[in-house]
Image (cartoon, rainbow, N blue to C red; front, side, top):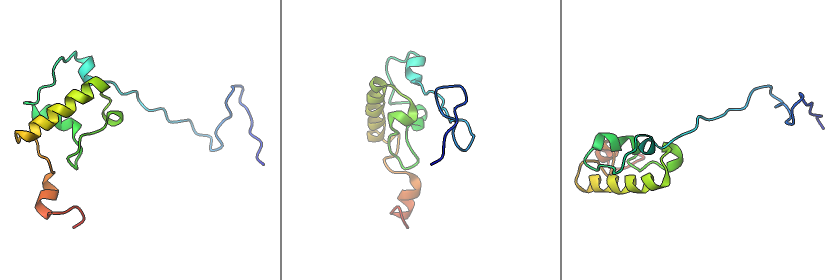
Length: 100
């Protein structure tokens, strides 16, 4: 068994000698800008929260809070209904399927 050496702290040093990756803290852009209502008529702002597959991005990826994520989902669905945003991305519409 490999004996781990302590470097003066309470945690053992990683065997590979590297430092741990610490991700940058995500924050809700709507809370930071003090947005009261998310406007469904602004598709350029909503596109940022849609994946390349046409799906609504989850909270852990975008960093939005729960309250604004719910409002964002409603706004994206309304924009899709009014044809401001696509339901399906263009490359899937052209080929007819995902794998072809």
